[in-house]
Length: 351
Image (tube, rainbow, N blue to C red; front, side):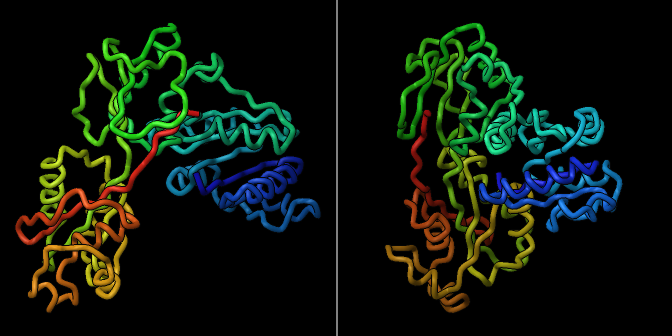
């Protein structure tokens, strides 16, 4: 979570808005605060607050697109009516929190786990000397929450229905199996067991098809960088097909991909840009000099070197884009698109 937007509606609320914004900035968040223009003129309002110049519904829709968290200072009902048209999915909705204008209660309303509303409410309650009002069952019962665990370890949840069923099973005090292809640090929670005979289990793997349990919830670490080179004019569909074939060949889910890397000559290549936008992936490009400086043995092409200044784009870009991770797939070529993969190491933490 990085970007937080705050809105208030009264004089008291606007003064609290200024305080909350200041506290959040101290904690390292990027904050945008808004209030009714009449209250911004008050001496204690704070100069960093912007006037709310559109209707609350319109403002809320904009924040659902741009912000990681939205804080309403006022009544819960105002927030609920404002967010209602925009609520879609717990995996993508921003965190929503309500704080009463006296700062007595900090109430997570939406995306308590995956969106981080519960954790943010906890931070704010400490800063404001308020009471966090947490209503999620696993938190109230002090149980392992799979979506919180996934969020903190940057894991993609492959099946939200299984995640819900696992939470229900934990509330019934049933055991949940656990397996991992990644190094684990920390102690397994009480109801999580390495036994493979449980009905439901959690598996941390780069594949969505791992199935050590009767019903397996795969949590997928985002550790793969795709290095991509292509001829000019290659479409999103052509690039996508080449990438998906390369991933399938390695048994790696598209959800394990964290970013894409290429040469700076391709920074505006429409097909590449569209592919990254479709899958929500960061796109990094490097100069031929930067790519040439990457140490290692690579599949070289004199023609590619003549055109780009480096004999191999995709393998070098994958390593550079992964901060010198391990190359797990050398260059594959399909219809003018080359793909390579590098993997960052990741440790999975239980707190």
